[in-house]
Image (cartoon, rainbow, N blue to C red; front, side, top):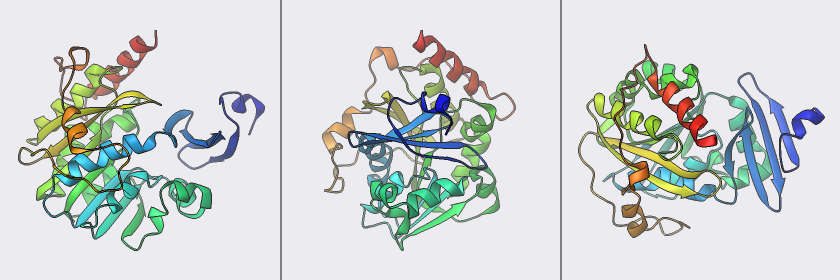
Length: 286
């Protein structure tokens, strides 16, 4: 790695690779491992459990019989790790674009340890493909789907938050199934967050927005999508470090500075979400 690139990171770089799709950098200091893709922080090992428990368990626990799960994005295997804590799940398919990311988090011992070697589990199948295309080419249905893509900071990513994409998701959802969607920060990018909520509802799905405090990122938002309104779950797997039924219920309450605002729906031909996201983070950074 060039010295100038090393200076971008506060902690020592322990691994750097360039794949066909992105620059992958991992840093480590005082036991904290951080993953950066194209310079953007993806997780800190100190608090990623908060993010991934909040992403996975409220939706997964709301499914009566979740036998089959699908994860789109999340090539680090951390969301898969959380799904595997639920013994009702028999099979998990992970679809991630970058084979180098899934290879590192499967075969590199220190990185695989972060996801409890989830990608080596016989219950898990890893597919390297473009999720937008993969959904169109496959017909399987799933009881639980996790959408864990990077924020919609450009038009290539923005297509993964459109009505077109959410219709494809809905076609893969079983009757009682639930989708959990990473949905950026409702504090830093408020309009972008509520645009995702509005876009999910526009395709005929119920949307239940919620948020959690992640120290490395601040307030972070998620959306549960389903065919019918969801009931708050009353139990989670015993091994969780953050989430309880009482905490989960509180995540669905929004204070005034993060509450809903008027927004447009994000369609493939306009991708208004990218502008909302860019404007929101620019204002927040000032």
